[in-house]
Amino acid sequence: MRVQRRQQDGSIAFDLLDDHDRPIAEVGGFLRHLGARACSPNTLCAYAHDLLHFYEFLELTGLNVDHFGPPESLALLEHLRRVPSRRPTGRLDLVLTTTIASGDSATRLAPATVNRIFAAFRRSTST
Image (tube, rainbow, N blue to C red; front, side, top):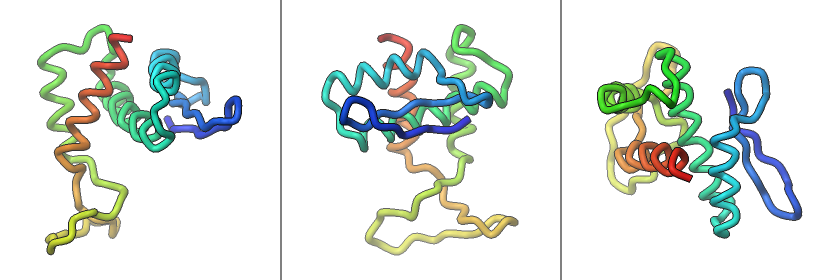
């Protein structure tokens, strides 16, 4: 799975593509909804990546959106708290970081990012 950035009618749009490079329809509809509300490209990109985390979790666990309930929400939260962050920390104070076997930073997703992932999922299934 991956996020694809593209030009559409003079603006920037994003798609979440499955493993066969096909857009995931529910995510596409949600991102178009956000675009119609004049959200910035940065916001669209953030939500696309948030939903990438969610759909990767579904794929990892063999679940689908229709069977996602409170027990799965707890499992998703536990999973997201272990996901390494791909971005450097934005904090201005000292932060202790470690590395994992591959040499990557062991800095995890920020709590605000985890909360936004849950919000993205809830909003994408209600539009």
